[in-house]
Image 1: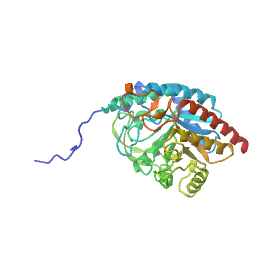
Image 2: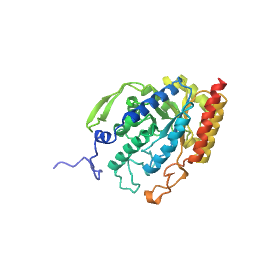
Image 3: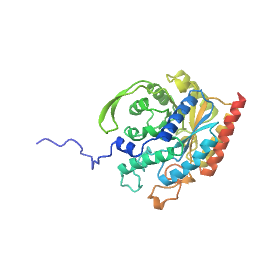
Image 4: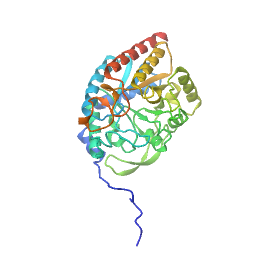
Length: 357
């Protein structure tokens, strides 16, 4: 009798709704698709040095409460319109969270924050949150973690990130090569930018790999290559790398690397993570320091990232009825009032940088 050799460590398999079903339920209509399209092109122009505005990716560290996310989006959409001449504001709408060991992995993986892992509901909620955000004329950004997720939500995203833990991953380089938006690769957790530069280079070429289509069938995908991949400085386990000298060195390293396109014009700075020690007060100070440098004419910084929510700080994940409304359940976030001030400061800095040319 043959041995059983497959699925020995699989406890349960649940079939999910194919991407096409959710896309039909929550389609990107005229306003939504226009918002996605325009923001993608604006981000492209900024990172390629064709637009002197600043790309600003701002929003919650992760989405755990769709109601709070929509309230935040309503506030941010007003500021996007107000600062449109100086800032290209795109909301962080992150549904997947990479974990160093174990922990809550995001709305898609565990939407009720109760350990039941209702991924079918999580994917449904993710698609709904995105279409709600886009209905406000506010574009969305996300981090790409699972290579299947993009088929469900890619058409609703204007900017994507590949995190520090996945920058060296061949799977994510292949994925980025076929994504329809600009993608930022973060420096490695040890601070090195080499892997990110190599990723920007590799993702610019065509690749062939296994994937699924919108009907959920396994396919062989052939990509065209993504010319809009760029570096994001996010600090490291050794400390921050947002300072002027670190930026100057990173730009020099990019110029001698194989990376081209956006990498020859500048980079994005993530004020969170290793650049602030996950302290929201320090994160706000980092944004202010960057703004001051921009105002004095520093070139090469094409965008910034900031983690922000309605309420500052963070709390441990738990079911919604046990949580403080509008406060992060992952990394600490800058509160809304402070975010408002910082966006004003960044817009003023862009205006001053224009005058300094």
